[in-house]
Image (tube, rainbow, N blue to C red):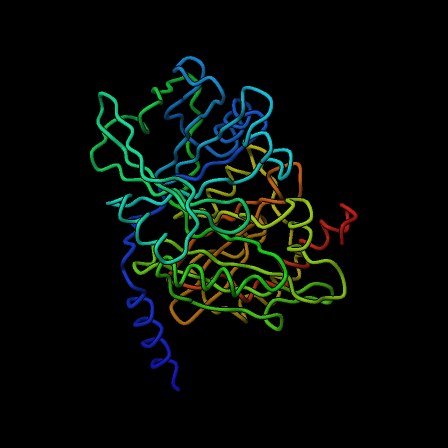
Length: 379
């Protein structure tokens, strides 16, 4: 089968990803954290997120506090408990800080709930309507891998800052954004032999199609291996790669994640930029730490990827990786874990036509991760 035929077949499969669940985009990502006020300061100072809304004691919420921050189309919610016991404390004790909610923006939250639960999704939240003077928001939710949930958010009739129950958060402190635009994809790590189960979940329950898959021959070093499949919704706005460990000589980064997170969860969030050199330069100057690839990576990279618009020197100085597919190339870089546990990290990605995920960089990237694992004593 020629490449063109394969591409056409893939395109049709993605378009045929039944649109019983039309998704408009990612609405927000909510992390349960030990100290939301300090985490909010970190995402403002280091990452350039802007303050949007707040809920806590001052808004009548007695058991938890949430800060909402935004940069272009990326919205994050940081939530901490205010009292002992309860679900948020349990989540933090078990997993450390981590992603609890991947919220999806929909036109009809009740229909989204009905369509997914009748196909086998486990209910997290039956449809409920929140109202205030700015209008109404309808929420519903289902469980996915680990203790992660998807909340469907219908906000067509709402004009407030975030949603009812929140007030505008308007501090004087507003560091400049760093050029982050939207969430490109979010990666889930699942346990041994669970990848197929969760890919089938996204296909059957949410109508996603498989874009691409990698096996341990694609993604392996001398020590570690993993398997990965990328699931995408019909319009391609939501892409969820799912990773599982594969047999290697030593403990893979996926096993390390699952051991410290105590189960499946969101491994990394990939944030898109139009100028990765500018974005990464700013992030580094604000103290964000990135994985380091050896300078030898750059000796042969252009032989592999061909001509690119950027000068190689600043890419090499910043450690930015380059990869090409049939439709163009991409530039990407991964932070070290942004939490105390070696669990979640963030990817910065700039696409120059490429639709893929940097397969040509996996070996260099995983060797960089292994050097970090070695320092942690977890390889």
